Amino acid sequence: MANRTSIKSTKASKKATASQVDAKAGTSRKTAPKPQVRKAAKPALLSGGNPQVPKADGDAPVQAYIAAMPGWKRDIGRRLDALVVRTVPGVRKAVKWNSPFYGIEGQGEGQGWFLSLHCFTKYVKVAFFRGASLRPVPPGESKSKDTRYLDIHEYDELDEAQLAAWVKQAAALPGEKM
Image (tube, rainbow, N blue to C red; front, side, top):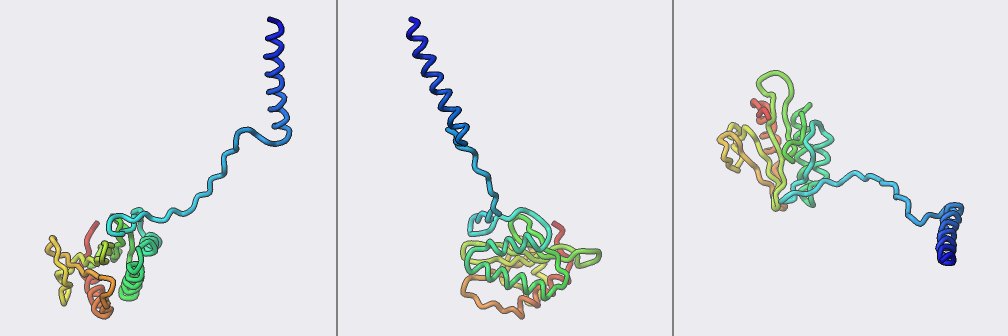
């Protein structure tokens, strides 16, 4: 019986000695956790390729939305954004409900949101919130009596002069409070 105890304690001491040797050598039997490096997450695309960008005010979230627009839609987004900025100096920007919004800030008749963009599978939808008051009226009808749409497909030619005229008219009208 005494013999069995000494065999067990010999095995235990060998195991302890092996752990001490590993510790002195700087090795471990367990792997150390790897440091986590956080990368800027690319926005997820919702149905139709619409980027999921958190709600926020300012140019940065709108630019993040545009950068995340898939394929040819990104170029349309850049062109539309540049057109709005050229046409309406000091335009206010935000992302709400996974769509960029453009508006006028301050007191007076024209304050509020006048335009937004949204990606769909085969086109980019431009919403004019007071579009029924624009001349000529944008072609896309809405369930809302005031809102009108312009759908831009991949191979459509943009009439930038007409778009600029609509944007200028829309910015001068009372905007939507959202």
